[in-house]
Image (cartoon, rainbow, N blue to C red; front, top):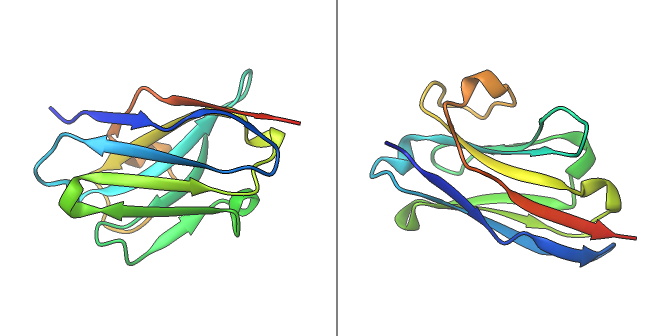
Length: 125
């Protein structure tokens, strides 16, 4: 059973930064493509960023390019999302997700088979 646990969310002013972490309880973490999604109140869950098993490839949704950085440390079974220049529209519950189905980065929700419970990020104006 794979468990993903997010941490690092909180309340920050616009323009500030947060670093989210996703800890995975699986020995084969390095074989998983990983991703971050977010869901704002009343909206669908949307893709934020993805990283390949090696960390060599990354992919971002347009609205976070240049502000967010996804990374992973396979030795620590942990993935990160560094979020800079935060905006009120970044307010959402952020979820980490893992995929055994694909080796490349992906923004498709159905290609992720493991999900965390989420961490709240609130950006005040």
